[in-house]
Image (cartoon, rainbow, N blue to C red; front, side, top):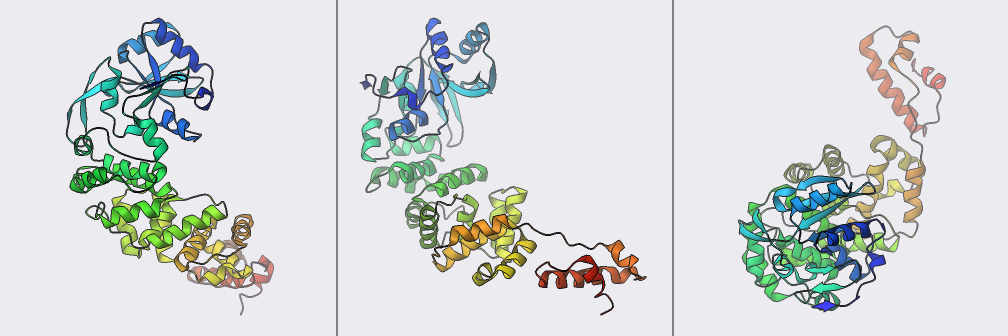
Length: 406
């Protein structure tokens, strides 16, 4: 269970002031440890994780000793025992040890405890129930380190019991399998997910969306979503994804050319929706206004791939739809057609570097040119703008005005 000085704490602690917090808690007779993702990711060699800590002090005790030592706190989730402690402007979430006394698949009623193993027993997966103190001593109550090393992702205790405490754990299981799993998926855990999949209907679509997006971010998203599709995990709450082979192609493509992953792009690709389905998905998953508009634009406008290779045609696309649309739509089209082009990075750079021109005429310019009928101004401007675009944005305002008579 205890692995003495097993973890290099420099992988976790970047701000030395955190050590002061350990000292304060210890002087008050308490214990403070890192837990969950911070420890798991450090053991896996992953950087850039969020720090979560646990303590055997109650939330009130923690707040009190922080105030005594001039450390600010914020109430993040006092009801569930979580206090935000501000260290050098950053909020560290510290949760008091607890056990769940009542759960309904979405929410839990908790009771605070001083027992670390009881706290570990309420967590979902063995790899997420590993703790570490500031000296690098690691406390592993459910063989999480060995499971992490072997790529075995499994629930603590009875998988069905863990899932019924919070049905979101079904999606979390697949996310962590996608990130850390090796070899065949744990069958006992998989069967529990299948048996309890209807429980996902109890969850808000916001929670579903957030966890689904985290799965889509992973390098093995296509493989894991295929397992979920084969076992009808998501089909009762979302349409069945159809382009998982193309998602696998897209993931390989962006990894090959070191392109930044984009979750919305991956979501669009696996459904390849028409406008109706795109709007339905955007509404059901409560996408932001900007995300929804981008999603709908991808569905509505599908320029031929060849237009991206021709400079003038590409510039027209950027002018009409914007850089973000063009960059994402290019990648989507390549994935849909399963095409790999060697100059893709240069092409994306050209889109980014293009300075979108501003149409040099306004309504008053038409009026000053002697057009008296206001009803004609809009039509004339539209026609002149088309001429200007077709000139690859080269005509000046004077040259355009000369064309009014024509």
